[in-house]
Image 1 (tube, rainbow, N blue to C red):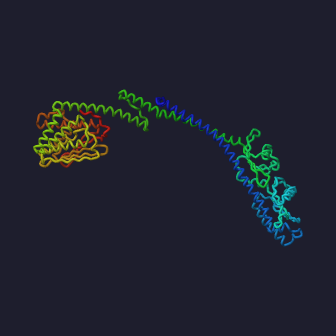
Image 2: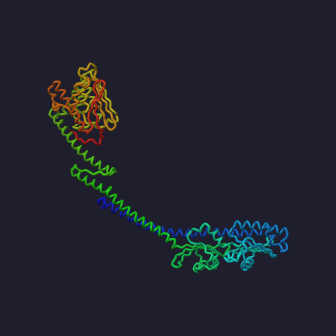
Length: 606
């Protein structure tokens, strides 16, 4: 059924089914997939942010703990922790303090998040580097002694600085044991970290990401947060606190005040801290509003462009094809006034021009073929009036040829064979077209018979391009010209007459040259004038039967005129003959368009 639809209906269905509907479905599918992908990407980004910040935090924790471990093994720190109060003026003590000062100063300058470092010896000596801070830290000291040398990390708490300004800090407190007696304490170290600077150090590469990152204790108190006012307080959402305390799930999705959140957690080794990254899923999805608007706009634009393309395509192609179809139908009914209006030079325009040209060609071809058939029938009618039965003549000539051979008259037999060949090719089973190779064989036999009659007074040379030997031409186009050279060009010639025939291709034309060394054009010029449309009325009649010179020339002029008309009818406008200049004799050239075998009418022989 679809095959029988018109082009317009087909194109509308194709536009709706293959363009509009897929665009809508594909746009909806892409939007759905994009929403899910954004959510998955948000979760992936949140986990990635959590892991990256945790690595940063672990690195700082490990670096700080390594600093405290260094104090156990360093000679200067051991000397300080084991010195008495009375030894502070001793060179050894001062040297140890100078070494400690250089090391800790380097650490304070390298790690800007370190606020201060406090050292306490077992005998009451103490040192403090960095900002001077004071606060209730006795509970941390007791916890450190209970841990017997293991690091103790505090939560976030406030300490007073200079000017009694409160600072939110986190500290590492650790009891330093004697390296030689590992269970005997020799001092205590406290390294205080600025909470705000520590948070910025951890989040330095993630500040522009969506969502938030914070650290809280397993009890639910906030340790690190971008909002300093939240530090040291319980996290405001109890579901998050319960999830941190009790749940083994690493992710949590919950809604607060109608807003959907996604939270991811991970415990920090060596502490009772848990790092949490959180993102607002509704905000992520809301970011798709622009994408949603772009999709809708894209779909509307695609449909609008499709409609414009449909209208343009209809008027530029379909309507013109429909018009061409209507004109073809008109031609099919035999109306040769069919004509397609051509408005452009594209393929359809070229098709229209070729259609118009085809109509003209068909009309010309029909007229030409009709005239050729009429002329051929006239020739056949004249031939029928005087011809002997062909089979009888073939058999008779063949019998005479064999009789001549039996009598050893070989030359006579050969001449009879040539005459038989000429006669057979002249009739050619009623066909009008022959190959160039056949035409050249015909004229060779004709010249051989003439040479037998004239003897040394005649010689000839034949040349033709082997590439065009199978090209079709109408028969007997060379014989009238050769006969003209023999009868008129060589009459009473004081030298041997030579005829040269050349046949070759020049561009898209076939050129056949007939050249002789005879008297040239004197009386023959009248024949050429007749061929160019300037003939006198007496050339319209065949007076060759009278037998005199004038009637013979008149009959020959009719033959040349007939040859010109046959060439024009067979090969169309541009075909014909022309006279070329030569030093002696005459040079006539026949030229016509190269005919492909497929362009030759399918003739039925008789």
